[in-house]
Image (cartoon, rainbow, N blue to C red; front, side, top):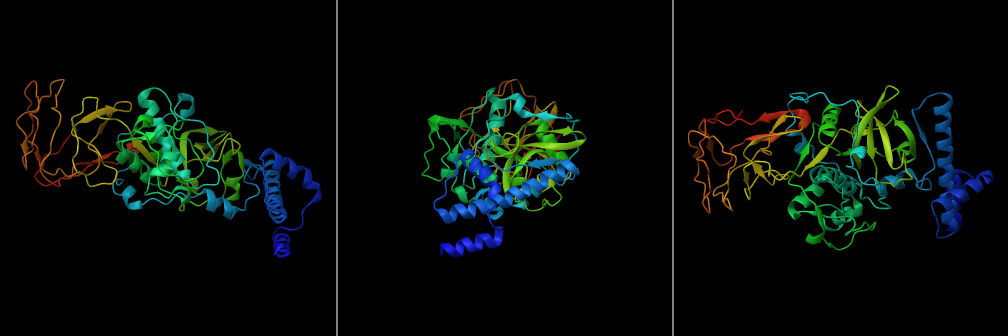
Length: 449
């Protein structure tokens, strides 16, 4: 068996090159590589030498001919085949397109202000240090907590790292090291009422029993937004206005696995089959090349200290396929909040009955997704509306709404014009900051403006 393994290794990768022995030993020492037996060591060296030739050829062409705008190097993945890297590390499950397409028919640029030429949320303290997911397909968990960390930092004024291990152990709709969905990670946080800090619940590179503690809760979200699929201008607006955004990309190429620096712009990256979840933390331009700043979860030894700059405005590697951002605002800024109302979308958990001014004065209707008001609606504890709200004439509520205990309305509240609320009435669905907002009209109801 050992002889057969060695024969196959030589047949596929060729004989070992003696002049590379010193480099091989230095690389093993740098990344603390230990192989279980001689056959494994021979095989891994053969794979490493294959990658050595690939990296050398690419960098020579980039320097001498200018064929590439990025360089490669022999990082900690250099003794793994391309298939091994993809199977172990790139395990983000493709999201359901229906949930992303249902509210994105309006063009991205309606009501959108001009965005800055460059953004880097690392400089604003919204991005935690790069971590290494190890030999585990947990990219979905790192991407999700990265987006949530940014939103919590904006809200609280300080950054606290959240726990991807909490998601791996407790988000049962996902599959731990075998992959998962960012949307279902956010749904777990919504349903659970929070997520623990990374300091309390550290990463372990494997799935264990759920150990969530309410006392260690450091983040939460009430819903999540999605930007228009495939539209990088929509993604740019969300990144500029809101913060770091979770995205999914095609990370299957050897050039991605061994990226060292520069603007990543390979000719053969898929725009349709994302398999790896990462975090867009900004964007910019370098010598005329527009790029995204993307945080990976393969450790600081990978790429530009754990980051990659990916070419922008061509949907490279399907980067704009599934942009997702959690919503952490709790309705405390003068919004009338109706709790415990059944809603009909997987990401709904709160229903707001007012508009608010967010993100540089853009008026956003916070009636989250299409919602059905189901009787009876209980408002507990009493709701105080302050400052005074002018609403006239009275509201027609059908069916009756049970208010218990009584609602304190001071001064008297009047509605104008009459508004009818009835079961299964579609109201507003958010389409992402970059896509505008579209009213779902219902027969017999006035237009809400």
